Image (cartoon, rainbow, N blue to C red; front, side, top):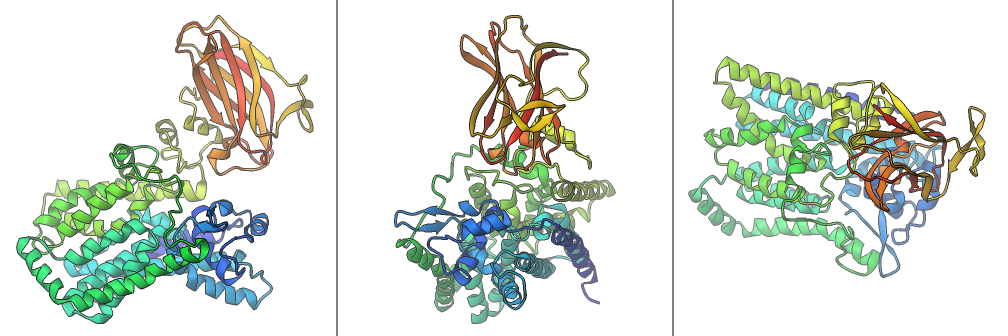
Length: 594
């Protein structure tokens, strides 16, 4: 069988990703239509089920039934009086086959045909799985044009298992990134074929694909640079390409027309929903072009691209080998140009960590182009010393292990913090399968002392017996303080003059709550503050919902280090950002610890 190595690489990648997909679909609490996905998806039920794409009044009832996080943020008010979806409609088009199958099943069965019942959830998972099959197949095809079969196989496995494509093609395929990855493979493949055949069928398909990309993530329309200049390696190539494009005006017009046809769907939606042809739906979100986020985006613990996907180091250094390889020399410049511009755009977005999710997810679609530089690097080192080959192999295997392990931490075992990671917390959970809830204090409490305290001296305590407590929940048969109002709750404010520079103070209490809060912005926060002459000199905090869940009483503490002289007031307070998720507190103790 020809190309057997790459076929086996493809098969292994598909099986590994499918395993993650199956584990997602078997979850008892399956609800994939959440947050961004709810925003992408809302076009379909609005249009085909509720006939309400302007007001979106159907959301309240659906949210109560299915507890869909983020459903009320999928659209914003417009001056016309209606609602305008935040996200463009490209992903809704990608969901349409899965949605259609699910809806046909639902209306002919006893399952609610409301757009959010189990068949619709599984429909989105299924179509995402199909897109993964297509994406890896075409990545294999385009790599096989330039590289030996075993190199194509190795590159497929590196991309599929060693990067965050693994989680986004497996259990998060409803997000836009794996779908865009597939579109990129199809665009590159058809671009290569068009320059060989000059076929109208190819150019129409390219136009449709680029149009779909642009209404999925508008900034990625810059992929057209690769389409126009694929194979241009020097000035002579550029001159020949410009002559070719000049002679191919009919092809270009066809591509522009088909792309515009797809993009016009977004314009017509905006016009219908708001009365305006163009709407900026991201409100106060935008870009900062001065490069302030570059270091954090590459190496930061919050979402550093090379920290969580270190195998992409090969993709960066591989541009050298892509350039010196005679067969790929003429494609390195358009790829490199795209990568530089695309990465700069992605890393300039003010929400540079892109919310939840594993790693720098906005980079995933560009892995199709990085695959060429990775393959070129593998080809380059294949002629080098055993030491270089062994070192690279061990590095790749480590990267695959790290990616798979951390994917399981994030998706299966729990405890991996996708949007608020800190250096201390990352170090604590590294390589750990059983992650303890109380470790999460390291996400916010920079002065946190982990492990047993050798000595403590009690300063103050409050069991809330004299407060307006709650008889609903008792801890050790005593009253507890119920936090059920949004705002500030002062637990303790005491004068203190005995603190010494370098000492550490701990505020600890018992906490219990029923509901789990996923969005850390809405979590209740426990603060400890040190003041001097009425001014807050130090403030440390923890998120109580990180620790409290399932109505079980848990111990929580926050530590603070004395860094200023003349501290005269110590305060302990709680800030509640939500009135819906009640917490119960008891047995507050404040101590000096050693």
